[in-house]
Every structure is written in structure tokens, then in C-alpha cells.
Image (cartoon, rainbow, N blue to C red; front, side, top):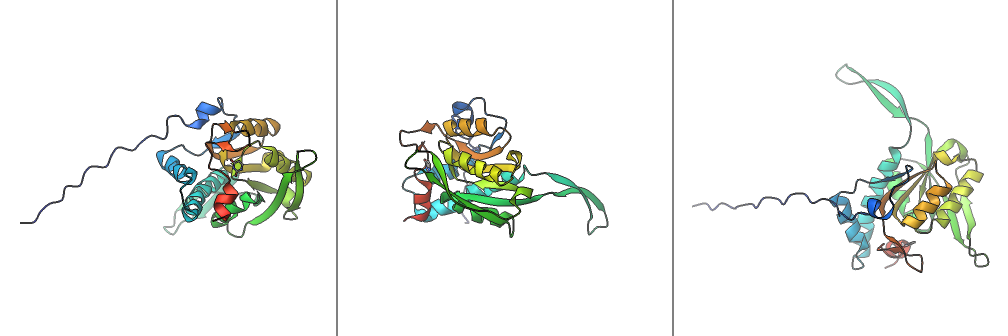
Length: 240
Ligand code: URA
């Protein structure tokens, strides 16, 4: 007689961590800050990349999944215009089309890790780069290198940096973009993990720029690492 296998019912979906950050650590959230929906799925991705025992290949794979979600969310904030098309059924569909050109700008080196995620969704997107480091004499963020598309002033800029700690480098990057003619309101900053201190400083300085962040953590330690954070993003991504 054939035996039947009893498949246990799936457990009910779990809510994302009730402590989640947005409310716990930065209340109220500035209106220019948008987080990804804080689902259990997203929290599971973050749990993997935060784990110090996660292998480099898993870190790459799962951080790429989050980056893809962030880029898609960033694109949701770009303007569209009405567009009407004919469908193969002969019907007319009144939809929308993309308006305006975009480019990515990665803050080196960790921001480079987000370029592939942007290219996956925006084929042949132009990408600029900017290198900012701490000036040993003044202890302030200093521009060391930048290369932008020549028409950057007429584009929306997706500024890419995975970790927003003090906000110093990101703020310097925005100043450099504005010196190149990019209006503040055409910059969308995309990052994986933010510290509330950095977010407060950055959004206070640039209130009309939008920030898309995956997760807002508890704070910074005395070495300006985000807590609980995930360690040094560049090290985990590029070094074995
Ligand atoms: N940059 C990182 O890579 N990690 C931090 O925690 C802060 C800045």
C-alpha cells in the first residue's frame, strides 16, 4: 500500500524585527529619507551580510540582492511623463514613460560595488566616480579624484555609497556634484546601512536631496563604525 507523506503546514510569515531601526533610532524620520519595506525577507538578507562568519561569496551575493532592491527603489523617485502605446490586442494603453537622463556616481572604493546593480537595471548607464579621503592635516573629508560624465549637470544623479557613517564623505561628494552644476534636488543618495548621526547631519545639510537607505542602525562606535553594522564593507566585499 502506497504511503502518504504528510507535509507540515508552512509557519506563518514573520514580521520584520519589531525593533527595527527606523522608528527606534531616528524618530521622526526626515521626509527626504525612504527606507526599503522592512520585511522579514529583507531582514534575513541583512542578517546574512552582518554575520561575521558569512563567506565572501555569500556576502557578494546577498549584498547584491539588497543593492538591486535599493536601485529599483531609487528609480521610483525619478519623474515620468504620460505615454500612450498600442498593445498587440489593438487596445490603447495610457501609461507613463521615463523622463530625464540619469547617471550613477560611486564614492570610491565601496560605492563601486553598487555599480553593477545599477547597470543591471539601467543598461548603458553613464557612471562617474569620486574619491574622498580624510585630510590628515585638517581631519576633514578632502576630494582626491573625480570623473563625471561631461553633461552631468543635466542629469539626475544616483549617488552610491553602501555605508553612511558620519556622513562626511557623502556630504563632500554632494558639494562636489553641486559645484559641477547638479542641483541638490536632482541627487538621490543610495545606501545599504545608515547611522542615525550621519543621516541627521546629511539630511540637515541637504534637505531637498532624497536618501534611499536599506536599514538604519543604532549608531556609531568610537572608531566611526556603524553598530551593529557589518564591519568594513570594502574589506568584506573585496578582500578574502
Ligand atoms: N564604512 C564601513 O565600511 N563600515 C562602517 O561601519 C562605517 C563606514
